[in-house]
Length: 176
Image (cartoon, rainbow, N blue to C red; front, side):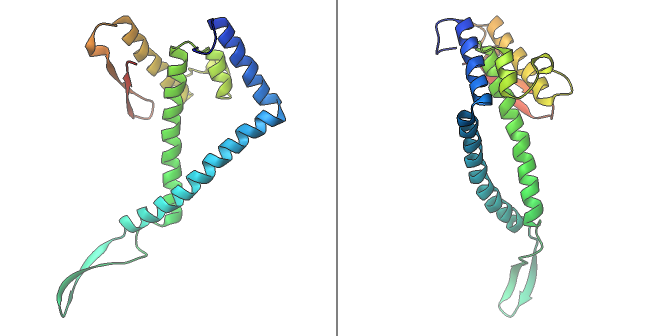
């Protein structure tokens, strides 16, 4: 809410900007191009990391030669880099969901409206925190941690709170 003088002006401004992004070909294209740039950079990195994963998962064996024992690594017996790409993208997606939950929870905690956050996430505000929505459930859990910090401003035990997210990942919420 740092940009405007009041909470209501801030919420109005966010709603107006989100509407412009959704309806304006220029702004919609701008967001689309930003996402494409991110995906292009990510795709190259994922491919490189998948090949590294293939090499790292290759099995080695020890063989006797005239000069002694040597370790031989077969180039084609690790996790196939195609399957490795799928694995890495799935893990990246899970990590992005956690990052999304944290960013959304923090935005709501600092005063952005639940409606604006839901709209930015392409969700309905009425079921943003639903149990069937893993990210929404994580937002709810993180908000509870931030609220606990607010209730105990002078207690150092509340400076950091571990929050178990829906997928079992433990996120450490920190007092700002």
